[in-house]
Image 1 (cartoon, helix red, strand yellow):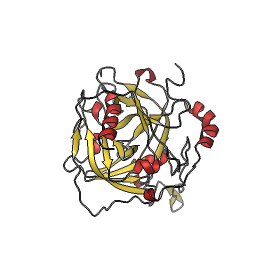
Image 2 (cartoon, helix red, strand yellow):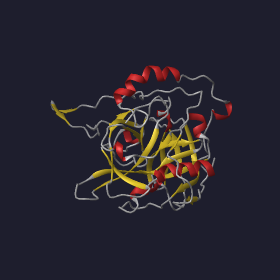
Image 3 (spheres, rainbow, N blue to C red):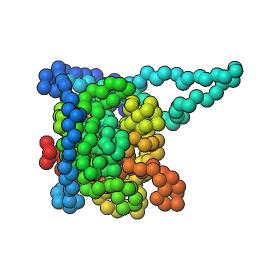
Image 4 (cartoon, rainbow, N blue to C red):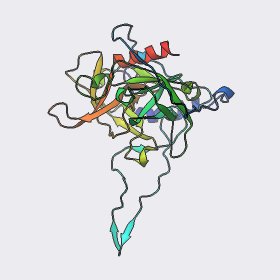
Length: 322
């Protein structure tokens, strides 16, 4: 299998970083029409849901991403400055302070270069989820993140502490399934595309999408970004690399459930699982983080949703709500 047929490994990405990033320096100024993207959050709006028929249109194998000429790029996000863990002492004895300081390999970052800037924090009446800009005004997330009563959602682009680069509201949502409680029959279709009232992708760029291939099972090709609530209060994005996916061997349909070695917690629902291919600087999403649980006798695992229906859903949303 050539590097064009599979995602790049971390060592291959490292070998290309200097060359690729030099080619992706900004060449234009941000157009005036795209400099301020803020929705009126005082307006309580509803966003209609469009359900997609599974076999109504052709399924593309991949859809390209996009980096605007006014946004620079990098292949590794810049780490955020983290304060040291506090030390609590009582009568000379060190105590464990009540702060989450996980030992997992998720790393907080703050980077306004493409593609790391495309991370989104999604707020609905049901809580907080994650997503990624996937088109000119399209954000990919998990179906169970959507508020199915109203469709309303607030999307924040790259929240890092108190800084938010842009905000938008949902105007519509495209999905196959109204996922409320994940189980073995809805897990593999747990994705949705939110159409926003701001053209976020025109300003910041957007990811591409590829259909997952089981030949990539158990290989550490994958990266993820999102907003877990157990780190930094869910107010900084985290980055993971060198993670694997493994398709469920009993899932034969166009939508696929798969386990992942990525560390996930609440708030990361909808986080993209993505990789880089060859000399293409655009990342491609192959799955979204869906759930944690024990489906079979193998015990508790982290689950993602992907398959050719994911690629098709993005294509339908982009085409019908440009």
